[in-house]
Each structure stands twice: as C-alpha cells, then as structure tokens.
Length: 433
Ligand code: PLP
Image (tube, rainbow, N blue to C red; front, side):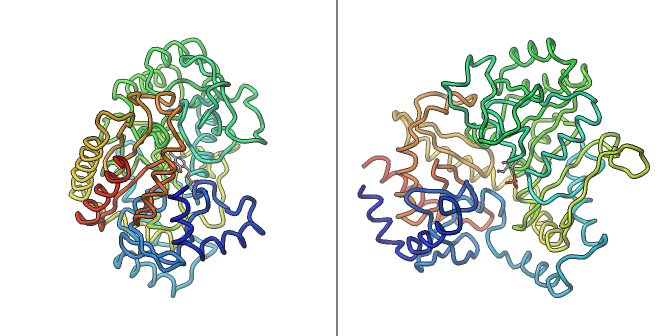
C-alpha cells in the first residue's frame, strides 16, 4: 500500500496517460511484458543507462528493453550509423549491401551456422525455424521444455508459464496453453521438463518417429535466466543426430551471454539458431541461422520449398544499427559483462542469504526469485511469491531502478559501478526493512 501510494505520487502524468491508453489498448498496454501494477511509467527518452519518464524522473535502466540494448540507449556509435542511414531512406524493395556485414558477422560468430535469413522479431524467427525444421525432418511434432518462452507463435506457446494444477507430473508434463485462442496441440507438440536428461531420453526413444524439431533455450528466460547443464544439451544433440530431429537453439536472449552465444560457451552445436533482440541494435529484428542443407530448403532452386517473405526483412535501418552494436560487442566486453554479472549475483546472494530468495542468472543478466527452492527447472521457481517480487520491483522503481516486475535485471556496457553500488544498497534496504 505504502509503496504504491509513493509510486502514484511520483508518476501522476503516467497515470493520466495510462487512463488514456485504456481507451485504445485492451488493458491499457499493447505489449504484455511491460504490464505492471498499478501501471507502468511512460518513458519519454533514454540515454546511456538512464531513462527519463514523462513525469521528468530519471531512473537507472536495469532491463534495457528486455535485454536488447547491450550498449545502452542512443549509443553515439549506433546513433551515427542509424542517422546516416535514415537520410538515405528507410526501406526499399530490393536487397542492399547494408544487410551483408551483419549477416556475415553473425555467421562468423556462430560456428554452427552457414546460412541466415532475417526476420522482424524473435517470434517470427522461431516460427520460421520450426517451419524449416519440419520441412527438413518431414516429421510434425515440436518438442519443447516446460517454462521455456519462445515468443508468441501458436505452436510454441505451450507450457510457458503453466498453471501447475493443470501441468501434471513433473517428468511427463501435460501441455498447458499459454493463451486462449491457440489452435490446439493436435499432435503437433510435446513438452518435457527442462534439464532432465532421463526424461528426455526416455521420451525421445519412444516417440522419435513423430518428433521433427527439438526447441531448446540454452539460457532460459523464465527459468531464472539459467543455462541448462552441458550434459543435457549434449544428450539433446545426440538424440537429434540419432533420430533425424532438427535441433534448434533459441538464442534470442541467450546470445547475450557470450561472444559465440550460449552454444559457444557450452560447446554444443545446434542445427538452427534463432536470434533477435541485441542483433538489431535497438530496432525490431529476428534471424534464423544454421546449417546450409536445412536453410537452403528456402532456395528458389528447389520445387516445393520453404517460403519466407517479409516486407521489412533485413531492413537497412536495422541492419546498420545491428552491425554497429554487434561490432562493439568484443570478447573483452563479454568478459567484463561476466565479471560484473558475477559480482552483482554474489552481492545480491549475500543479501538474500538465510531468506527464501534465490539469485540466479548468466553473464550480464540476473534474477531474484522469492522461493526457498534451488532453481534447476521451471517448477522450482513457479510457485514463488510473485506479490513480494512485484512489490519489491515497484519499491526499486521508487528508488530509481527499472527491473521487471518479477525482478529480472540486466546491465549494459554503460552501466556504471556507482549505479550498481546504489542499486545493491537500495535492494538491501528494501529487502531487510
Ligand atoms: N525467444 C526467446 C528465447 C525470447 O526471450 C523471446 C523474447 O523475449 C522471443 C523468442 C520472442 O522474441 P520477440 O519478442 O522479438 O518476438
């Protein structure tokens, strides 16, 4: 109550805009992830690691548009590239030389990839990767893991955040729809627990005749921003090899954990990789990268091929901003991200010690979950105290730090040590008072 009252005091103009937004957007927003009680602060501008809201408050960004801005807001290098392109026009009916450097850089960074196609969001990339996977394996079922989020495409919107009452046994979960209006599984998808090698092996050995695609998050957004065990990924790789299943790593968010992605850190190569977020330099983007023999199924040289269109695919604004961003993400930057991330997690864990709170994360990402369970799969964190997490997130916002309502956080290259110190102190005060 007190936290919310203070928040309302600080954000009267956001409250007004929210009332107006409710007249046009169902629920008052047009993007589920930014929903927050009582309402989200309306952002006016971003610069470096800071956001300014419409009430004139400056807050430290600790989520960077869902991890997609590794260099922070309006980085001068990205700005220069985008401004230069802006003056040349923003979209053409034809290929450009601007899309090549980004594609070449990505293929170069991900040794498992030989070809790439651009799309406009991570969701679209996953949708296309699944289509390529089914076309290649000629088998219908997509196998995914409980709690893994892969965007809003129907066939993967199952058991993302299942109601545990409906989800059945942990080792053989019943697919739970994340949304109303899905077409139904209709034999098109299966769900298994994340990080459970035995359950994976048993299921695939019994059902491989139908499984065409295995979709894995090698760093799972909604499972504590946690990487699975290397052995789990190795087993997935081996099973896919044995049974003609196309292995997709969804690195839309995981690509932020290392210069060569999560697959580079793990030393496991998927057949296809989906990308998004950071590769667009702050613009909407997606990409499907992978083996030539799979992605070449979209080559016009073939007959009944995989079709893939998109008015804004490889948009030049995205391509130049994405390249300007990615070329700044050197191995040294990733090393610094890891060092700082480890330091933040260690300091948060020290504050949380003895309390029913878990601190998890990878690289530049971290999360606090209000549960006494050690988190290794979705269910370990699913029954956390969300009301507590939301209240602490709002209290952190009052103190000038924007995280997600469930306390996920991220740093950028322009986040300062002083900002981190104040952030940690604020968290400590809120949690221990
Ligand atoms: N896949 C993963 C692993 C993601 O984290 C996300 C977004 O959070 C998506 C897919 C969907 O990407 P987009 O929001 O760009 O559609």
